[in-house]
Image 1: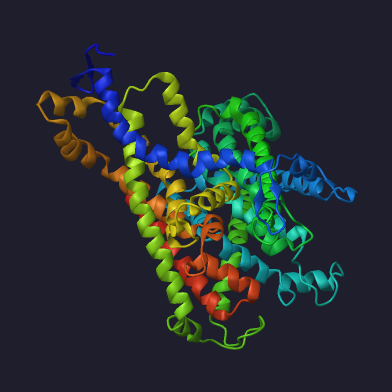
Image 2 (image 1 turned 180 degrees about the vertical axis):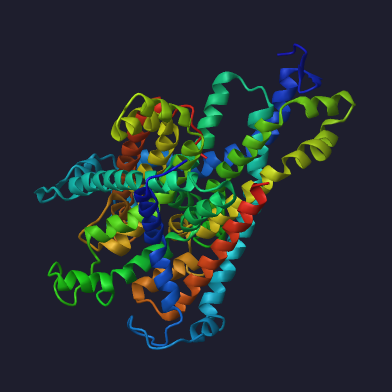
Length: 301
Length: 261
């Protein structure tokens, strides 16, 4: 500890460095610990507590919240909450998949523009990303309203009852989610595509690989780093999303985010809300762990 | 690089898909009728009314005060954090722990973040009424997620700086304070500015954290729009949304200008 070292041109000892470093470190760490880590951990304790008659927290140990999360209520087992959890996973999965499929052509298109205009095209992707989500979501609400061409078209085709709108519906949730998360996939994917080694593609073509094989053996592996980041940035927030299903899905297409929000507002059932939050956190951590092996060297920001 | 024209078509279609909703909102913000979605003539009225609507002006003020104060705090804390992480020889295990603390606000889903804050403020309220939901609690909440983004941005700048200038400064007998003020901070400025801009935009954009921590007197623009969507949207809200969208376009173009040189 008292050994002299030279650190960035300064002759000092580790002990002195630590003492000074703590001043830099502590404000942010204390802030994050106090407002995120410790409250987050206290959710665990809260999830084993009971809801009092007036929505207050009663500190009696119970496993009831977790039983409810698995569907066991006072009226026996019902699939509702399990369905909400599975649906959230499914919606996040479909959203991610469609975003990836749409992102590839877009990323390649932008990368193929001349350097002078390339960043303008990229800005076109970044602008919706920064546009407020509430605004973009209510905009879709309008576009899918009964009076608008999309719903009119569906009505004439007989897919929709006359005077009905395309929202609230699962389709509306998917559309909202896909447009919300598309930029999250395109941007990291583009940074991989931009650095693509095209000589490998030429080599594949020289060896008479068909288009399919060229893509999956010469292009796809090179884009994996960007793709991984895009998938993480989409899948995790998509599972916890509550604005989009709230505005576009209606009461019949609840996701886990809505369930949590209800517990902290309408139902005032914090302990159950805490249990649901931990369920979501668990899903998130599993998702992250599955990707950890691949995404290790990838910066999230 | 030559591309199959189908790729181009699909790319343009995807972009159109992204912009269609905003376009519809912008068009309707100039529509004369108050109710319904049918076009009945062009008007600037809704934009004029916007600026005499006290509720909207109040929300706009709250939004900017919140973004400004939280960004200032988060920029200071985040910059210090980045320097601490990058310029001090922490033992390997503490370093790993610190990295996790740094990434935690980035990977935690919004809604869990918000719930954790609700629980924290609930507990703090037993000690002081300062933590009643309002602008103060919102600032605390926003700073918590902004710190990480500032720290990550500043840190990548620190990494790219290397050791040479630090060592040169110390070799020439700069004291630590002098070195921080005259060498380190000027070199870091681009990173700090980029981090602050990121934090500011994140705060302006945030809905979920604000929704859970706001009080009756601290409504922000995203909250106001959400509330009016539930009540039934008026053309004024279309006008407001269009203005916010244009502001976003300007911010994105400005930051592209600043960062690509």
